[in-house]
Image (cartoon, rainbow, N blue to C red; front, side, top):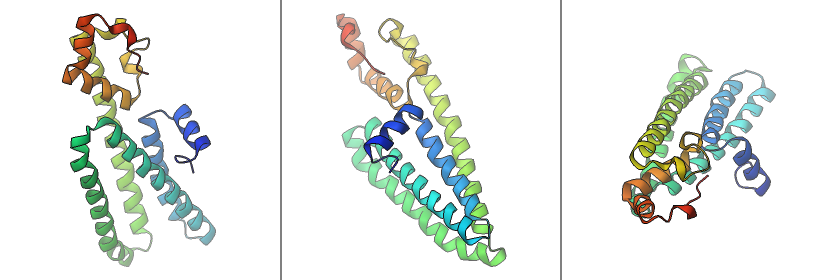
Length: 187
């Protein structure tokens, strides 16, 4: 509901711009798995419901990010490969879950929540570092501060990646050189 409905989508975009929407969804997955660890039926079911909601939210957001920042030709390879990786981790979880459960019944949840939390922290570091490097590189190579009403460092992740790709291709540089920079508006 949060990503597919009009109200939910506008709520997420206004309060959690990219990449924070991804961070919230992965954090929600991690917390939900830990809630599902509690050995009371109602609490366990609540954790599973939140887990499913945040997992669906993360899947939609990841597909949107991939589709937005990847060229059409590259997406033909990256899109399916992302699904293969995702399904491979599902298989690994299905194989290791019973083994971990045999050791300690709540251990599969603890491992899954911990791995998701670590993955979230790594993604946060990598994405925020990439955004900062993109902003510095774009600003230094193209002197774009006069073109954009906001600082490049304040752009959301998707816009930042698009501007970097446009600069790399040379489209933006050509527009700057031709003096048609007044029509550029990326937020």
